[in-house]
Length: 386
Image: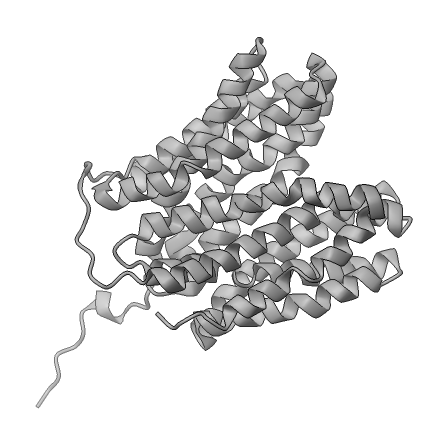
């Protein structure tokens, strides 16, 4: 008996995760670029506009409030309706709001535009997280490309913004409007032709207990991230006696490690499972933070900082995918909480780190950070396989 040859489409290899996810990863990078631009731009409002420190921190708070609190609510909305335009509209609003803020005059208008930019970020994450999961399927490596895009955006923000702001002043924010508009247009053309309507029916049982445990782990990761990002350069300069250039290299190394760790975590999860990979990342970070705290050489410490960035971000994409596995009927809500609310909670601990730094210096902050991941390690024991 002769066998019928398989059709050409069936013989073709499945598209790689990169081919399937490049647009979602790029869009995430552009969106989170505007989150990273806020702390880069705020000092120039002080220098160019004469804002006081309270007014300047008000801008940071407006961005944080706009980006964090609404995300779970937007997640519920995108789970109930097929709002394919939400992600491109969100990234466009994030870019236009931030871009116009540097051109606006009155402080209340600047505040409103910064808040609108944060609101655009909040719109993007749940819808994009849901769409990225549909494109990635069960591939953690695919979701890691989407998650890594956000780390790339944060990394590029100060790299791109600082030269422009130094040359043109705070009005240079307008230069960052085109990327948002362009990626929004591409997303609308490629992924959002379907008209808004009822969401596709999803099956499965939502498991809120494991999801709460996972959210706790993400909060711990956020606290670590905020503490390190805020004080890493000061630690190099004031404790290790390094130059500003070496301190900047340390920050860049940590951010590079964050991107690498996110991609690595997806590969590990596909091979060893999401729960085990999350636990691996939690355990790895403890000795690495201790090592970072006690390495006396400024250059050797840079290598450790890269390793710390890798370890902290190994669970990142895994946690987003795992959250959606725990809430199979609410992928937008899961993405909104893990990418938005839980990620922003770490900022609430920044004043506590500031008090520690005032009394014990930045080295005191890094000493305290050594104990933080132990909470994530303990929580990881309660994670369940989806």
